[in-house]
Image (cartoon, rainbow, N blue to C red; front, side):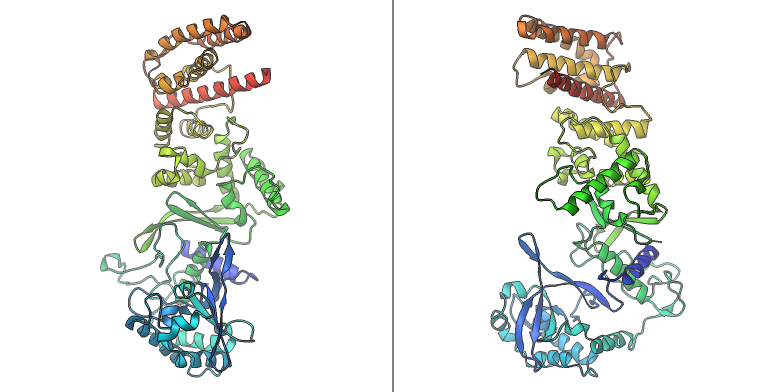
Length: 582
């Protein structure tokens, strides 16, 4: 199913103008420089093809003759490669190994192009025949810094002619013929297309771009031991053309400039639709929504895109139709999400979901609906990005400390509508106890967990009519803390000392806290300007404690979560009321 969906995406993009999807026999590679040759094969210049990326320059993605798979030994690419193959030298100089690579590049040129009469190809052949490996650094340094060139991929261009030599029609024809020549690949039925008697791929192209994976790439289909053999087949029944299609499509989705991928924890997720759909451009923004700020530097298009995404998020959170904001959106279209994680030389399939776009958007909307809680500060995001939520579960709030298991389980819960991971609740409570701080993001996570996993009703903001004891205890603790803050100027409040114990063992803490609050309120009464606040706190404490008779010895994790939400709601309400009075 996965390979079939990727093959379909490749065929769609191949027929889409300006998609940049390479045809069979080619591959998209990072190219940094072009050697500009004269008709006689002399080097006229070294053209820098790199593109600006902030303050740095990055290689340009370019379709070239399909790259070879270098697991071991010396294998050259046709009409492009690294400096060690084109010049016989790199940072280590013209070593014996580099000269061997240079000879392999020259032999491939002669083998593929023995019948090519194209002037561009003849120029490359003459260039290679006359090149002196020992003078590589000196010659190249006339045009570009050798340090930039020797580690990069290069192609060839004929001086005064448009395009590159590997793109010239006579060269492409011979390259295609070479790929079909003397093939000893076994014939069989392709499991993707169903074609009969087609050459089956022996080795599939590596997949690059997965966070944490090897730079040389990894495989999602590979066999290298008898333990992996099934039904007496030592390879997957995938045609060479189909293997090229699915690997090219996946590498395109994982490219640096792709807008169809997102990293969550240690897994990289890619997504695409069965047919062209505007959601392919915006789906990643559902997990990391843009901030609601109209910066002067933002372009009008960026502001319109931000507005559209926020409108979409509000619609799906409230259960309304998204077509009100994206009229061209087809909710019935099949949408695919694939999660990959590194595993040595292979890639693990962490997640796979194939469903209608409307169903997926409904699940994401349900996630934001359950997260919805009054914000502590106005500059906090209305739609919390997943990475910021995950950071609230990590030590020091650092992304590198986020549990990959928890991150993957959270992503799965959002995309499938399944319960949140069971360890989410204890992890959030542990961070609150360690840092003595109930943040907006932690309160939102607790609320979402209680609603989805425990089917509890939790309000968005303060509910003064709620009578369940854990919620009231959290409210009471917030009032006691605020009374202390206004009575005395202390660097450490009861929150820093007793928040964890008050939520877990209220019976051992609250009697002492109530006695301490009596002292704080009496001190406020002695101040003429604060006497009204003292009476206000007394009434608040009385109204809250009227709804229960005793303090429980212990509370379960769910009750502690409700305690924290009550504390957060009351704390927000106290500061809002104070600001309104001021």
